[in-house]
Length: 221
Length: 221
Image 1: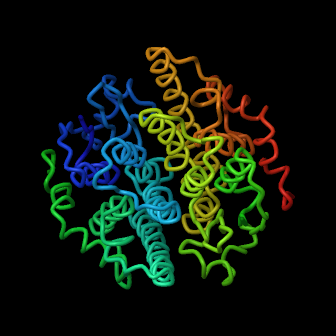
Image 2: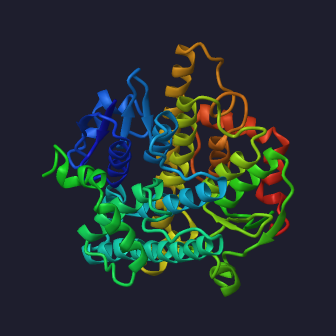
Image 3: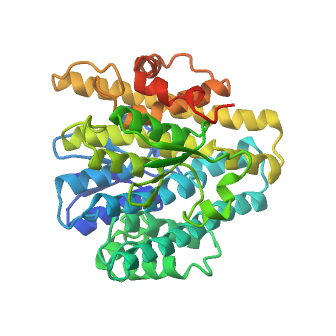
């Protein structure tokens, strides 16, 4: 498999974690977003949205969208699973992932920040406020959701979670960890998010997360 | 089941379509976003992010995030399926859904437009430009992706699609249709998106989509 990605892209990072957790080897193909390499015709003509990441399967199909790619990897390489057993638990894990992927990350990616700066002429300080506002608000919601799920697990007689859901990494952890890296890079206040940060830190003890992190990427600058 | 939702919320609309496609009865619980009813403690205390939609299962569990809810419905009520058979096709359908849910919709929901207006003091005309920009750009990417998938289907000897993928409604159609309604409401130019609009119009021929539309909701204004 080939993963088209960028070391700093949160969505790329999600897929790298999943590949590492599954122990799947892949060719790392860097696409430098800051230099606009995603718009090169050889890449852009193969993808509707010309974003990263994209995963090329061994038989040449190109898959878009990080969460769709991770679900694909989980269906085609089931061990270790990145979704728990049981429809209810799976719904909770997918919802946590989507709280990051649909509520936080889209407001803070590079093309949005560029639009704020260039089209709307938003001053840098207000652009930073925008960034901090959505990440902080989204992570506070994430923290509350983890607390609600912890209570639900306790009521069902399940062991407390060390990670987002249980003790084995899931799609939710694949989404959370890159968002925390991103927040740290931009100086977001992560105080008071104790349950979320404990899950993050427990993930970062695991070699798969370490191997997938931006500083371990071949295109890291 | 109870669906907490708002007639005008695109994410709520996605889940209503899925429930109608599955033929599942549900209690419609309106949560008026413009009036801030989602922040009432009885609702907000049960959900990390206090957004709509949320689905309460018959045994009292509350599920968040529209795409997670639809995947849950598809796992617990498999007929008719909202994802195709085969991991590759499923990845393509999920990616189409996420092109709407992770790239277009998050930039245009009510809380973001309010932030532009109140915090960033963006004039109405520039706010409308923002809206039109992201919806148009996102739908152009969607149109290109549908064309790529049509070619992939043809190469694999599959029949041409009438909807987003094939002739049976999927998660991708559940996400596309509300986004088109939203774009139409805000006067986005939908010209030149012939494949996308053909899928939209084919969906709207189906009773399930008609029954789920905002004008058919009990809280429609």
